[in-house]
Length: 233
Image (cartoon, rainbow, N blue to C red; front, side, top):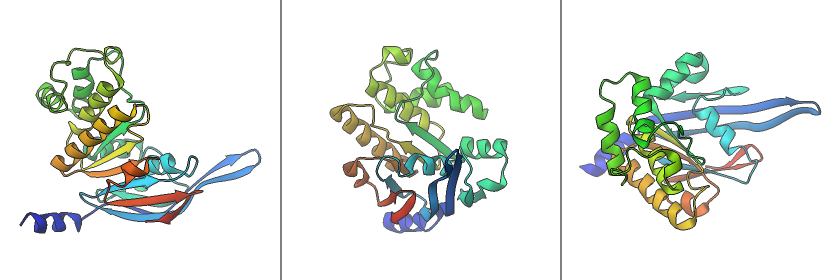
């Protein structure tokens, strides 16, 4: 029965990229960062985006999340065409459906761990923000560090707070951009294990940008970029 439910969930499309291109003007001429990138990601799938530095990975992630708009093509996220929405509309989609984990944590230094995790719930207008935030911080092993500020936490602890913040809204889709890039090998491995455990338990669709082939191998599928083109899907 579980296998049947899993197959059914994965038959539903979570995200579609069609003919994505990104070009920027330079004094020397137009620079093409992405060229004709297209793929579909199913609900519950974990997908890695890999490629050499400068291949367009982070740019692609920004387009998929609606943080930037493509020069050509479009993204459909959760059934909504992002290019047909204004910035407020794209922000609403992100707030309702998307979580983010970044390489440099992006915690607000003036807020405690608990306050950082409560923030997306408050921005969304949830009535109970503290309860879910406390619960997810306990889940990531920081139940005793709620009142600590980012400067009082190690890099690994800061990334645990970032993971808690990403998952507290129960996003349908999680974007992770080099989530272990600023961590040592041992700490990074612990964060990866936690990321995949939380993702599995929540049934979230994961899109992960990484230069680490070992991390990519833990995903269901790997999309490889080379000079802005999708060469393997």
